[in-house]
Length: 234
Image 1 (cartoon, rainbow, N blue to C red):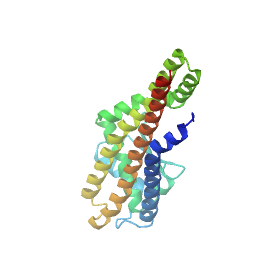
Image 2 (image 1 turned 135 degrees about the horizontal axis):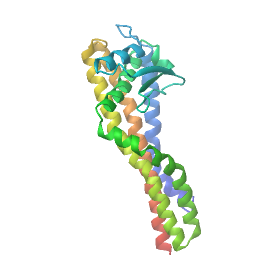
Image 3 (image 1 turned 90 degrees about the vertical axis):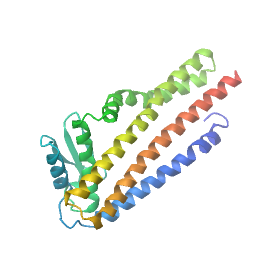
Image 4 (image 1 turned 45 degrees about the vertical axis):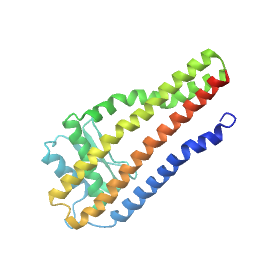
């Protein structure tokens, strides 16, 4: 980006980028494989989610189908669990795992799980910082003045919210995965021999969040090094 910035960016970001590519490949491969393996009980993802929610006192949470692939999510504001087309009507091991994971988020919401509450509070600031931060940073860096340096620092701080958000997301996702595994292993919906598939799908999904955190941190580090270099030049 600036002079030798391209090489610096590659050196800092390449490991995280490679981890991200590997994580995306793993989740797509695992999900595709176990989407073709039907559970013995034959319950669909929507049915698995409904049972897990009801058993945890969450009959008020609606379950809706949403378009796309791997677009499953829980909306804490509307108390709605949305499952993608490949999960909602599928009686597969992959669908059961994903549905239980998303139900785990609803249970976190009910229990007022700290990291989930913090993540929800951070959403507005992250949305602003993720696009405005880099713009302010680059403009400040190009100004090559003390006020420009201050502006770049502000941009870096704003963008740093994305890294904090990614780090806060990790315990939220890992906890939901743990809840899903424990409930499925004791529910009778998934037999012991089928839990291997659940583990592979959910562990692969968790790896994507680790990769996202690594990518955010590496980008912040790159910006910080650019800023440090500018300061030394002055």
